[in-house]
Length: 250
Image (cartoon, rainbow, N blue to C red; front, side):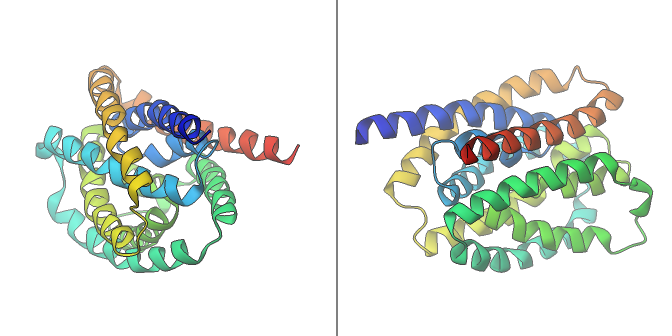
């Protein structure tokens, strides 16, 4: 039974992370949105968060390298600092939250962020407001505690008129620092145990597969289609979680 459980966990993680990595490497965010609904079917919520935030570091590094000439390095300094400050808050929330409740929180966030992405008036965000820094702090906590928060950063990036290559490079730069610090926190609190490390190491393979598939796909997507794709990804992931949570109540 234990062997079967491990096999199922690995299989589910593999498929989910290929999809999640593809979404991340295409849009610049969304590995948690895309992968967690599937992984939560077989793995507890806290382990899912740790795995996603750890394996995605490899994809972030590759995206940064791929889009290094399009990154707004100077503009990302304050958001990165604010995001890192949000990590300890996220770790406290993560450690104290019941796994079952955390799963519900993740599902709820996906749904809310999906509708938020669809209906937000992007004109309310501009370069003269501190919205980017505030959002970065919130996202730092959300990513650490739930593995989800990228849509908020993507919405701000879209409102600032960034191109898809700028988004695919600048947002991963933010995630690399924030989630890298979060992973250190997971390690210090004992969350990276042998089972989680096994799934994480195995998870690097589908993440790389997703990256290379997305790299070929992203070049062929026009800017207008790309922006619509981001919203579709969020809404679709939200619907998946709705169905998952509803089936659990039957």
